[in-house]
Length: 240
Image 1 (tube, rainbow, N blue to C red):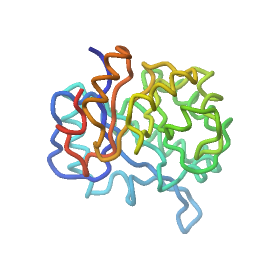
Image 2: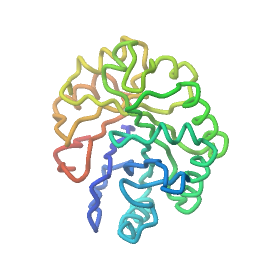
Image 3: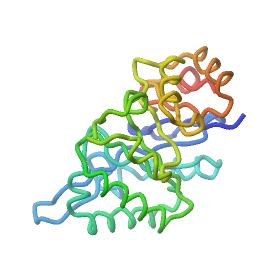
Image 4: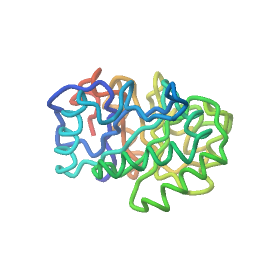
């Protein structure tokens, strides 16, 4: 059956071990900030993306890409960066597209928004990326509760307000601590499509029995994902 099996990749180890069930890797995390001279910067975690310490990371991701694994770039997360990105949009957008041009293996953007943002600006950003990179997949990483109910999430907006624009390809739901069939059912009852939701677990703790039951109940389920590679066993975490 079709469906994504994805892991986030933030704890880097030389010699990325990717088994043949993996379809997607989300490189984490891109942040934006301001230099001492007042100019914005782009970081992969705490360093510039082209820092020599990331040489093996890009090499390993290139090998994964050659194996037909899709590589997305996650922006944000707990480290933030959206405030700078949106307040200095033109400059930061240029920094981002420069990175994408240097690394054409990247074919997707994942928005992990864990700070208050202006939803109109987020929608404009997604549309800009879609226009410039029409082949890109756009994903977002909301808490499970943000998909189960129409209440404001960590970004201060309701995900249904962006869902109606049909500009996000899939949602990597953070079902951390609630990895069960009922939790997924609640998202479907709230109006989301099963094929657009990935069931996400923390450190690969999602039980295979739950995944199998979900596949039976929702044959077109979007897939499964786990945070993150450095703290999980692929074999146990992603039984797809």
